[in-house]
Length: 122
Image (cartoon, rainbow, N blue to C red; front, side, top):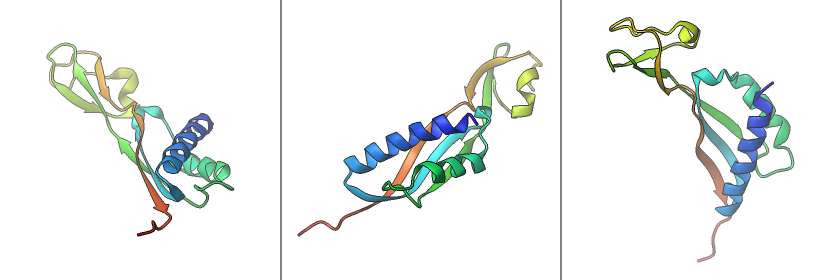
């Protein structure tokens, strides 16, 4: 359920950017979401379909690109990847040090908006 407020915020940003670019329609919105955000892609699309009717984004789709999680070891400094399930007990696979600085996996950004503009006069 935490997806709805985020989707509403994305919607406001997308509409503002699309209208600012002279769009008459939004076809696609590309989001990058880190796996640590614990979003359910089906819910994101469902909420998008719920809030877009009557807007220039009605009928548009959301494409979600997942960003994997990585950390920098506090012991040896090497960068390693880990899964969401490992989050509670992350150990460096190189030296065994517990934890590290998270470098990726918690992102949420709009990476692209596909729009249709009115044909411009020559």
